[in-house]
Length: 119
Image 1 (tube, rainbow, N blue to C red):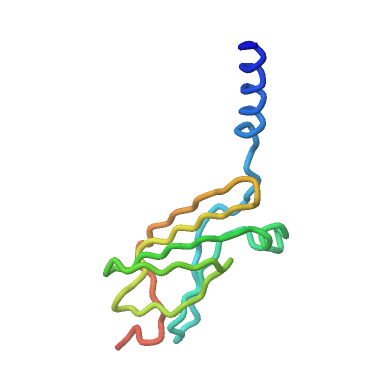
Image 2: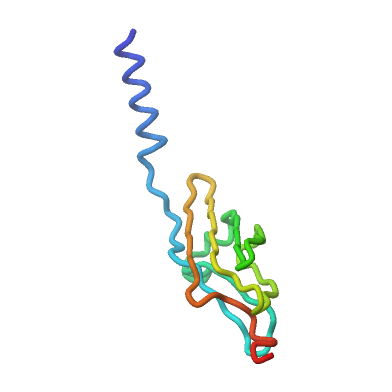
């Protein structure tokens, strides 16, 4: 009985933990149109290269210079970022229904919109 129990546990652990996570996103990137207060954050590759990425669940955390945090469940969040309180760190957890992948980026230089960059 003990050998059977060990065999079943071994088989189940191989199924649960032996899978590879097929999430292909490998980085966090940002875009800002000159003169816009908003910053667009995204992971790559985009949906053109990986059509399954639109079906994934995304959980974003953004940390500002003053320690405040913003959270989003959008695939590619966009929000205003003042240059007086820039984004210093972004973290996204991507879940595909089977496994998850965490991507972390510390921005150097820190990120802000360019609406009032010269003021």
